[in-house]
Length: 128
Image 1 (cartoon, rainbow, N blue to C red):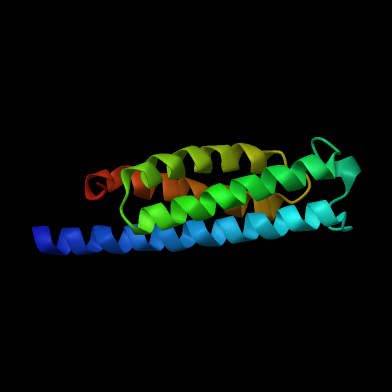
Image 2 (cartoon, rainbow, N blue to C red):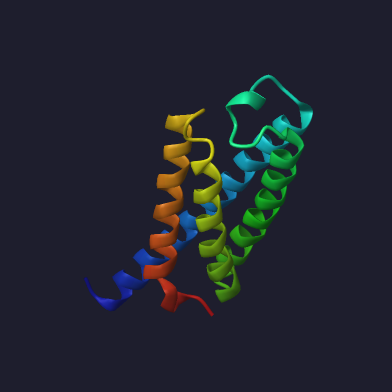
């Protein structure tokens, strides 16, 4: 693979990660709204901590930061790259608390976060 093809491939991965990060942010926002609404989707007894308001606020803040990171990653901003890695690690830890309740969903989100971290770290030279 020559230099131009490598650069084009990296740019595609970074765009893919930005879209994926925005999607994860939107899904966390939906989960946060559901938790704040007190919907039966979340059972207080099954969560790591039964305070749905805390989960809702935490998920909404995380979602807002993830959407911000998505925009910064689209712009190839190095701050977006750093914020993205930090938020993915935080999101992994958050979803580990949901593994016992929603194992498939949580493991899927964790796998996506690992993919995002990998892509952001491997393609770091393309961020300004």
